[in-house]
Amino acid sequence: MTDEIVYSTDPHWKPKTPKQTEPVRISFRTGHKGSGMTLIEKLPMHPEGKEDLLRKFKKRLGVGGTVKFGQLEIQGDHRDFVEMELKALGFVVRRIGG
Image (cartoon, rainbow, N blue to C red; front, side, top):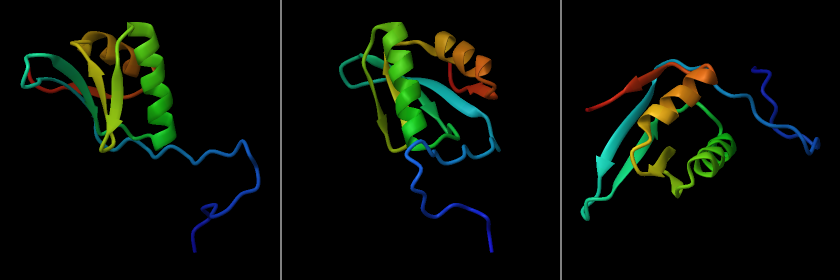
């Protein structure tokens, strides 16, 4: 039997972040109208943590973004900024594509 918490009455309890087994992937893709977005994939975080991290990035960059299918999408080419921030948080990062 595992020692994982199934139910908690503590309002401040958050699930543990899983360990990073592979690098976080950062890439840039252009849409059908030529506008581009920075994609952050394989981020080993709880969905609430991803929302908080995306909110922080959007506020610092002054751009829009969303979480779709577990990956973060940020409007514009911000791969350098995202890479520096994720490395500062202790993640192993790999740039995919150009």
